[in-house]
Length: 143
Image (cartoon, rainbow, N blue to C red; front, top):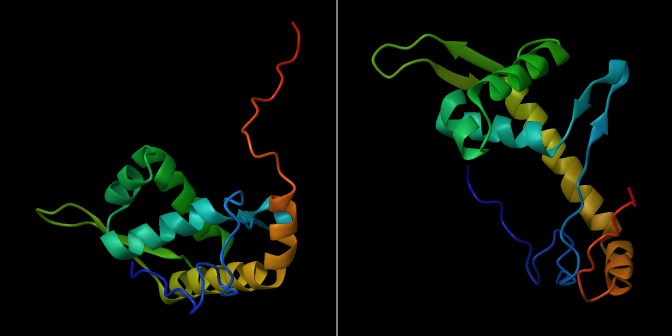
C-alpha cells in the first residue's frame, strides 16, 4: 500500500501538528443489521490489496488465517457484491484481490476518516491538553 501523503505544515490531515498525548481518532461505522466497518477490517482489505494473499495479510496483522478468512467472508456478505475475490492458485497457492467495490469501500472509509480528523482536530487537541501527563494504571476492582 502506498504511504498516504501528509498535508503540508504538519502530521495531521488538517495540517496542524498533533498533540503528543493524542494517539488517534478511530472511526467505526455501525451499519444496519448489526454490521460494522472499522479500522481493522479496512486494514485487512488494504493488506490483501497489496499482498494478494489472505495468508500474508493475516500474518502482517498477527491474526490466524481462519480469523482473516472469517472477516473477509463477513465483508463479502455485507455488500451487494464481494469486496475480495479469491481463486485457487498453482505452485504459489491461492491468491486474492480486491474487487472494484472493495477498493471503493476502502477509499470511502479512508475519506470519512480524513474528513473526521480534519473537522475534529481542534476539539481532539483540547481533550489531549487536559490529559494527565503521566500514564496512570487504571484501578482494579476489589475482589
